[in-house]
Image (cartoon, rainbow, N blue to C red; front, side):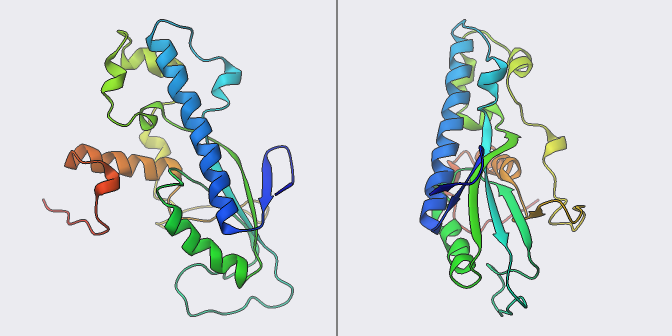
Length: 210
């Protein structure tokens, strides 16, 4: 790996990219979890510096072709225009096979450059606890926790990209995925809520009925 800046690192393989994403995600999740557990045990809330560690990793791909953009009939893992594309990522280890499937062609066929770093998007504290009953300890209410920790906000969970409503200028990064990390985490927790099952055990196809 070659350090590009203070916050992003360039990697050369898809495997290195997913490994780096997972290392950052595990570190951030652990930071949130340990701070919450300390607070529930009567300790101090997180400092501003500690909270800066509560952030999702970011995957950034730079595509700067020399000449025309090559065409490809594949419906995924390809570029239509040059540019910088980015998204935040949650649970990289669980989605490893999917991420590798997407990244391998971008590197091999398009010579894309991949950078991994820390985003500005915070991880809501309920998403780092598997069952949720851990939060019932210590007598702290949800309102108390919301004063000191990032919480799920519906205003941050949007479908703007999938709906074609995302706005950006020539200087900004283009979206790399239809749904960012906080949107994905929200959906994973909805699966747990409605099925009572670990989201990792849910099969690829879901039938919704009313």
